[in-house]
Image 1 (cartoon, rainbow, N blue to C red):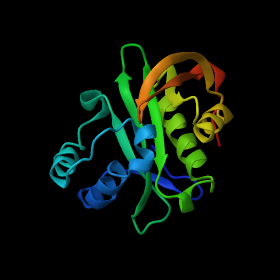
Image 2: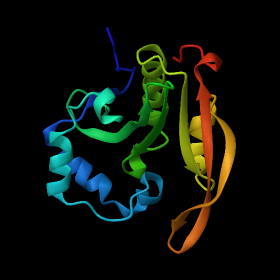
Image 3: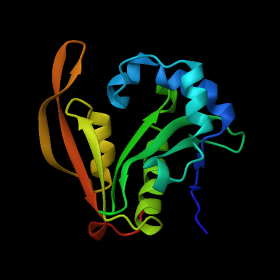
Image 4: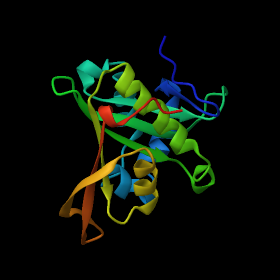
Length: 181
């Protein structure tokens, strides 16, 4: 049985009642750089997205899950597998936690542990990768803590507020990982 429940948080599929949470997350300009968003999203578009969120990862090539702290259901963040490539057994991974009050409380670490284990044990992935702005010290610290290694830097890769920024690509190979706890 697949469990995506940790000690203090759990990951769950998106639900229709996540509309306002996702609307707030997608329209929070303070995290646009991390989420690679450039324009606001309407409730209409997010509602359409949620209606199609039941697609299997093999269809959608993406798995987005809500990060929740307790059984009361409210989400505090999102974690994604994207660019899922079952032929080559790889996927990108990204995470965002809403609000400063939820950060630096081990939520991201626990969510990442759950999704890495799921990816390697249940999806049989060979590798995960993350694209991280060279200025994002918190994300670099989080991912390197789990064994992700910077394998290259894409120069002037992202344009933020008129300034080009470098982006590192971090990779974790399954053969370099024991089950995380």
